[in-house]
Length: 323
Image (tube, rainbow, N blue to C red; front, side, top):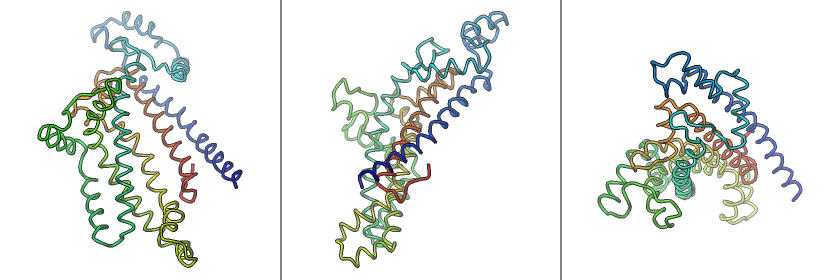
């Protein structure tokens, strides 16, 4: 039995890696091609539109942009695999360092939002499924319907107004790193994380409720009842394992979306995170920084979905997605 489980796990891992590795290389190639498509150049940014062709050529040569496209891509890709995302065209700083400064802020908020969303979403979805067609089910359904259409920036403004300005329980803006203490760190990320978590709560609760209600209608549940298994055992062994798949798949999609959607929330709460860095880089035409942002986003999406696929294969084999 143990060898069968290990074999299924390794099979799931191999299939997932077999899909995600090519996806990563194709996505990085498309990402690198952005510079050629955009027509942007560091010479235009640094020398201005009135620069002479000779000056532009000299600076592009310095950046290696006069080399063949595939040679440039290979140099860039090997650097990416070493963790070197290039140099900013705007300020000459290391892109990896710039992204790292903002990514810590955004990941803190995104991970907290995901944990809060999953815990509350699982609780609400389970409660609604266990009390199907009762007032509790209708209340949960109504709540997730309302919250799913509310933008995160609206929720953020409401939270700031109530808990920061009105009750003075949390700071209205700014960020404190973990180096400054767990308390200040939690105080600064709580409101932005809550603002982002409502969408996760709604989707997880909705998917879990649907999956559990569907599982309760399957013949294997009736067979378990006939065999005299307790309701608790039926739920955890049969219903939950087979009904949790859609909710887990939703979690796999939500985490990268949380990191990407943080830009508006970061503006509201005065945070210099990954989202704001991506927005500022795009507006300034800093192609290496934008490419670095896209590469990091690709890695986050690929890595997190790989983890979710492995978890699906272990926890809910019947609901495992084709990978």
